[in-house]
Length: 207
Length: 207
Image 1 (tube, rainbow over the protein chains, first blue to last red):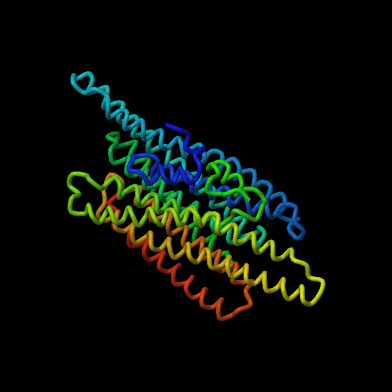
Image 2 (cartoon, rainbow over the protein chains, first blue to last red):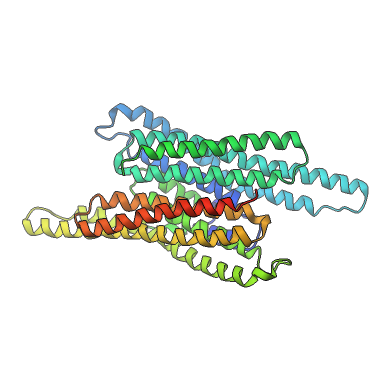
């Protein structure tokens, strides 16, 4: 599998559109979260060192640094998500003739599904963290870039919610009920936080 | 300016994050709308020709074809949006010593701002159209790809709303009140439609 993050935008979109199982919604959530981080970073960078914004300069530098770290992590998650789902498909192809083979296969499938739920849960968590940075740049950043900050908040909310749907669809195949209910609970919490944080950040806009 | 759609994802994100004015929220909206089209197309392609989905085969083929057309158009809009805003910056750099120069510059700035509002309005319109296709794949497409369809709907809603903020921020600099109020009205309508269509499409999900 080629490294998705190094594909051109045109090629990445064509690969998504094709009838292959990956990349899909999970990698798209990671891409949208990385885009959100980049937009927040942009607003911070358009504020740092500007006349009239001296009082928030240190805060904007901190936001830019955090956003850059999240952008790098989430860009890698574009591939991590598709790789995790590919492992599910690989596990399904394991032999299942003998009882021992069936047990091995079942363990591998379950372990792969767990990873395929854990990766988007991490994306949702990071997307919600970006929304806090987004609120800061919308409230205190360069108002000429207000629509860029708004786009960042909107992209982070898309990422959090799309990632949560990916967590849920994979949990549906997991037999470990304790694991599934813990992830389901955190997913629901992140979904609700994404909605609340978007509403609050967008309410600060004057455009 | 390099063609944005041919940049790698990593490079596009780095360019967005930088303190340059483009690409920003407008190009991100077009990218998110193109991603939405790709995800909807993916679900249609994972439904076409499958056993059990014969009754919706023709409808899914039509969805895939429409989504592919919108994907191509919106991918080009990633560059069109940034080019339109670059024209605004170029117009601002025109000489303004004489009265004639001032008048020429003002006309060029106004014309560039109009284009910079028209491009994202078109993106918002296309994003809302993708939401209708998204509803169809969520309702009738392969349920194994339900989270991909949901991601498509969420990405389209992000695109519509981010594009609308871009329309509005540029309308703030336009003197032609008739033009501005017409676009403002359509932007508000598209924003409300995006919310309503998202709510309805996501309510059809069983994950």
